Length: 345
Length: 246
Ligand SMILES: Nc1ncnc2c1ncn2[C@@H]1O[C@H](COP(=O)(O)OP(=O)(O)OP(=O)(O)O)[C@@H](O)[C@H]1O
Ligand SMILES: [Mg+2]
Image (tube, rainbow over the protein chains, first blue to last red):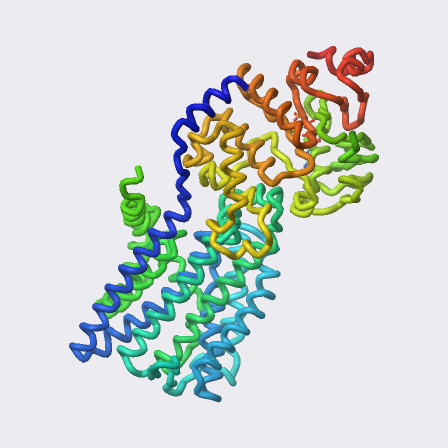
């Protein structure tokens, strides 16, 4: 006891404010996302001046896939669950949105439908997938997505292997202004705003006690029950949240492209989302946005030069894992954290 | 003194062996009840049964008159049970502060679960209280994985205590500690017993005799004897089964 008192006295001599490292890291992510938004706005301005269509639409696609990557990061980076089937929800959102838009060209109806379907399917599939852990969880999520992809592929009324074409242009009524989904700059800016909102929702939730227990789950699942939390319910909640984020992102896809195809549900989509998060930085959220842009641009640029763009992406992925195991954010974010801490240390 | 925990005929079988076999005892409020016994006697398994980590095949666990038998660990915690582990079981990649904050956040109202963590003022106050009490204040910003063994063992107790349990189960808290750390920890546990009922597993017989109010001796899954330290020490059956080998 004597010893303890001595340390205590030393410790209280100058009470040091304890830094909440996780909160600090999240604020650093906010800064990086703000920078991302500034860069995207400049990009949009240049696009408008140049009267560009191609790059603005490519940028929009990058943002949509960044939304999918966000959902992967919630699971992989914050809950410690590797999903190899997140395309299930992305594709689900895309198909639901396409089907609704072909019936009623209402943006909000499409979004509401994508949300409800993701909640229901996410909950049911989550009950199945969360019965197992680790590698088995990865395999079950993979399997569920494969089943869904096959089912869509073989369903005539969903366009089978051709997918659904002829999704109409939709007006997106935002109250103050209405954005048309076929306006390259307008829809780019709308998508940017939408993905930033998704980011903000994820970042908010992950910085609450709920989000912190998800991190605890990733760090040491065995200790979590003795803190008074049901690990099953937590994992299920994270899974459903990720399903919703992926589905809402996917719902924008047919608005951009005017069609959906079964490939959206294939393993390449799920796998690319995981690669995106790893390149961007696992467990940072901001990394999903940067990674999404990098991967989409690479796919397009390299894809126009060579048919073997998958080889290049594979090599890039391996190089990242070996040389930057924490991804781009793993290098950049600590610098921002130090800046935010400023003179306090 | 009132009875906080009642254990009645608790037992479990692993394959052929009865790891714990019909064990009954009471733990009284604000006292230290210590379980002793040779390696493999079933002490940790008994803790696992009490805290719900293993489902008992027979018997009952009652906390403050409420039958909790068969509930999962997270409900046991909510009913007021806190426990530490024989093998250090922390969030090693999170800071000391965050380990304690995670444990303390159950003190908050449910509504705070989806508000930013800085709004959990009660949990944060609890963390500051605990880092002082456990002499971890200078280390609060460090990763739990970077602490010394002794500090990790201390944090292990602090995490279990953070939830303000009505009974605290400590599984060999001094395991692997140096002589002086063991003495400090024993004094700390003695001090904790002023506010919380303690159920302890401890190998250091000097510590056991010094701080226990009541001792339960286990041998091959069964309760061999129980009583005050002096009574247990004098028991011939205990002498041959336990002290005989020491
Ligand atoms: N999950 C399990 N499955 C099978 N056997 C087990 C299991 N857990 C414990 N045992 C066995 O039950 C017996 C009691 O083990 P337990 O860990 O409870 O002993 P202990 O009294 O805590 O010993 P120690 O002092 O070494 O910590 C041992 O024979 C052990 O091998
Ligand atoms: Mg043991």
